[in-house]
Length: 387
Image (tube, rainbow, N blue to C red; front, side, top):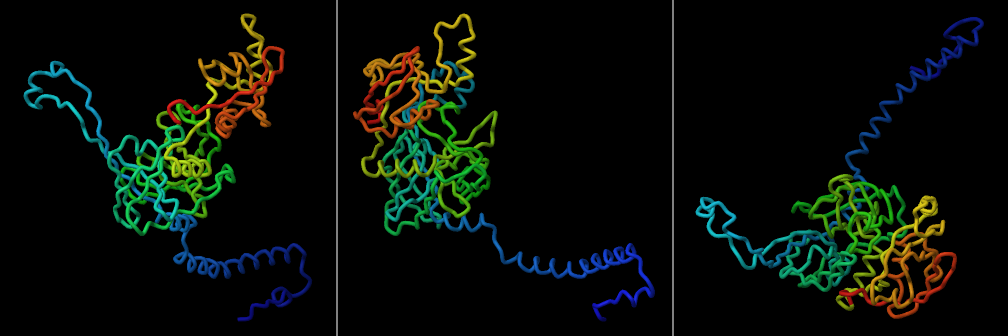
């Protein structure tokens, strides 16, 4: 049957414009139904042979993801047997005392061809034995090269030859909110578990999550991170590592996961490999964020003892005794607005500049004290207990 249809062969004589338009509309609908099965058939033929980008990304990094099993010895707390019902004491026996072996489990990722595994510091805290299960099921002993509790990172050396292919590292500084985020690890001992999400936020201050003993700004993701995922990699759509999974929010806001940016983790790993520890500079300040709005509200209070500068900065809440900050002359109520050449709008910015400073080398701070603009020179020292 010919696909060409003449209008004159359908209706003789003069045709109205409305009739022609109605006829053409009907013809276009008919042709779309004729062509539709071919499109659907082509799409259905393409589906079985394809994989999602997630599968491709996982295939790239999975050989470098490991499970870490640990054992540590802890002292059991003394317990008064008189607190137990006599009947239960007869059934259960006397409570035990002395050392007890505890088992732990986490994840890690191989980052170089020498078999160095990057994981979380809390995964290998005070452990006596480390057993690493590779992606192919091979089990190796591991040796903790170093831990940095401040950034919650640790480095483990695999024993034996033929180390797994290392993961490719990405650039966490190039991340944008909304980028794909894929978490890998062994939550609850379930090996090779993969979850998918996006980068929900960047530079999330860990102190806002209740961890005041850490110095981190984290990648926030909605990819599911569960106990046992700690130390595993967070990767992008190309299968490159962009972070090290570290914790998950429980309670209000549950479902949010966090990862340490890989650029920071790489710098820490390099120091751990060279020295077995990381030395963190510190000033000895306790700081709170000040904004112009907060300052204005404070200054309106007739009972306010001091007037605050109506601008953003890091407000000194207290100065630790015998600290570099005290020796430099900083006081409670000083507002730090610049560190070196970098403007300071919040405490996190100041902490970042201190972390990048050299030990015992002068760091210039610009502060506002009352109505005066001052410059003070402070020499950071090693964080007590970490160097």
